[in-house]
Image (cartoon, rainbow, N blue to C red; front, side, top):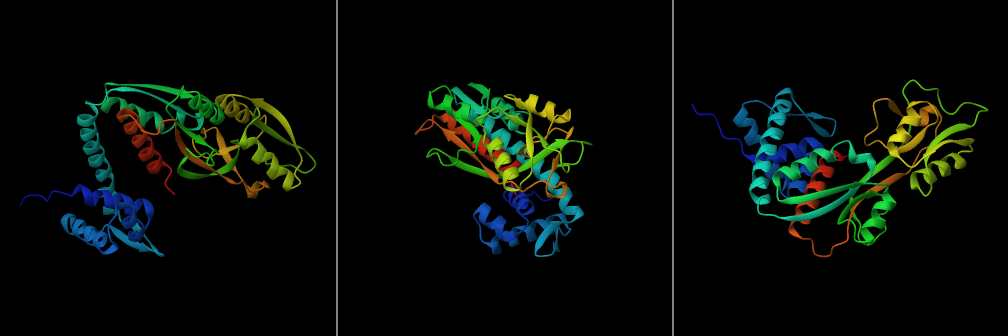
Length: 291
């Protein structure tokens, strides 16, 4: 008996259902009705001969068989999408200049940019890693075409991608913070920096004494200072090194606001190469930063 051919549209719905935790939300994401999505999942279960989901509270979680199918679905879809993009991308030429902050420069975005380069071999990609404000200044001067930045969502060219909670960050095994009667040592970016302002405001509102123990203009230097125990800092949870840990209310620290992650471009009409890179960045961010 021949094995069934799994429908890639169904597998995309499976990924959306797993990521979002409900058929309703998955239906909205893939542009189908809930009944159509339910029918897709039943068909997939019939093809593999095993239930793929079980109820947990008000949501759905994958069964062992569902986890197995999901891992194959990711690989199949990645290969399918790379093949299509490689054929289409071979026709696209030009140059794109992309900027991003250090928070994402060593995590999931390099892989996305590498994939873009493989599928668009005729496109020259220049990447700049800078502080958020510097990236926007360079884009406004015409030096960059597309930038991914945090904290500038009020600009008219901002395209919202995600809301990222801020987090206090300290060294693994470091002393609890704050300690009674001792000012809290902070490791922060040089001003201007909206993370710096948010942290100071939160501590002042909570009447927690602090002192500036370490300042830098480099994210890697900031991580190194925190890892050495020179002070705690605050960023988002994206790309925190393994030598550091998140801190919070249980350590006596005040809550922090969230920061908006947005894409900005200096072009009203995107050239084909830039439009393709923008799509890759959006898809990667949506996949990796989904709530």
